[in-house]
Image (cartoon, rainbow, N blue to C red):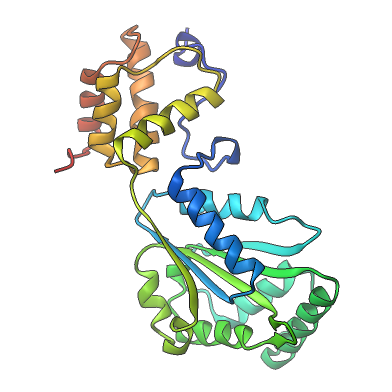
Length: 273
């Protein structure tokens, strides 16, 4: 009998892979979505979400993308995977994501192609939105200047594109590479760790999605999970995933605080405070 069967779970409830089914609409994530949608619908131009590692920025970006109705928005999510990205590559990638075929290799020409595409979408009643995850990795003044150039493209009703950057707190330094761009941040939201009550609700939500019908963790265990994770969703997932496995090995229902202590120490997680 494996650990999922032991706890009567249909699937792994605490995988760190992004799965929108497991999105937990905490108060702060719901507020972030409301603010981002406001930025998009009023075409504010530039919105920013920052948070430390594991606070749910990528999950929020995916959720935001999923909630943008394709009949009203032309939206794309780009994930930056390395720091060597240059401005030419970025502009071409945006063009391709927005459906521009045969994107030019010439910077001026591709900007013209983008402008015409923005106008075409605007005339069709659709708003253009580019979401950029791990944006703090774009450590190039030239790229920041190109983003400012995109935000300069306006129609009779205002800006033709909304950019939403998701990143670590260092994103502030990245934006500061082009001070005029940094000054154009119209909406900003910071994600932080959950408090203990939200940590408990988050755990129960994920267990419910995975088919849980009975408590798996004691109240003391949940308090310990919060204690070690400091309410960071990614760390909550890691602790819970390991604890379920260890609990099944020991045939323990529900999982005790002692198992949480053991697992957290093996992961080199230090208690908060």
